[in-house]
Amino acid sequence: MFSETEPLVSITSDSASMPGFYDYFSGIEDLWFLVWLIVLFVWIVIILRVVKDITARTTNFWWHFFSVFVIIVLTPVIGLPLYLALRPLGMKYDKMPWREAILSSMCSCSNCATLNKIEHICCTGCGELLQITCRECSQYHSHTYGYCPNCGAPNIES
View 1 (tube, rainbow, N blue to C red):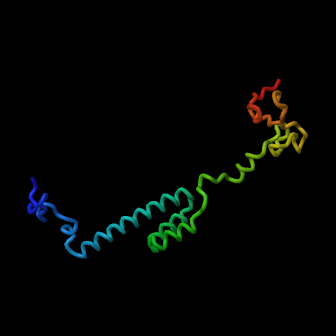
View 2: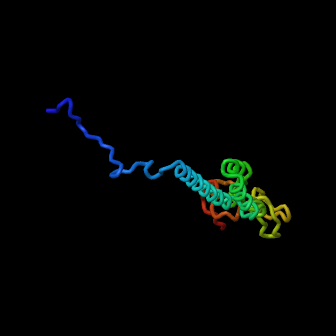
């Protein structure tokens, strides 16, 4: 059926019909141009990622300018590790202003408007009750809560 002298598949090298990789890039200069294009593309992508990261971390203009300046001037090889070491750790939306943090753990007395810790049962200014007893579980909770945080019973005063 098959002859030993006859090849099964005839492979011919016809460069006119199927150009190879090196046919597009005839010289070493063209290969270096391709390498520099890839490096430039990666550099631009890193700059865009740094801009996106720093805008998520802070609204300070100087941090934005410094971050992009470091990546552009010092190249991603030196600038990116430097940026990663110096960038702000937290995101800008993670931070709650200190006044809101204080007020979230404080409540004001309805009688004298004195700020008290939310755990206090009575006002430190006038002695007014700040917490009520739950009818279901008999635990104290703030009168500002709609439901008991321990058992979930509604906060209905009679």
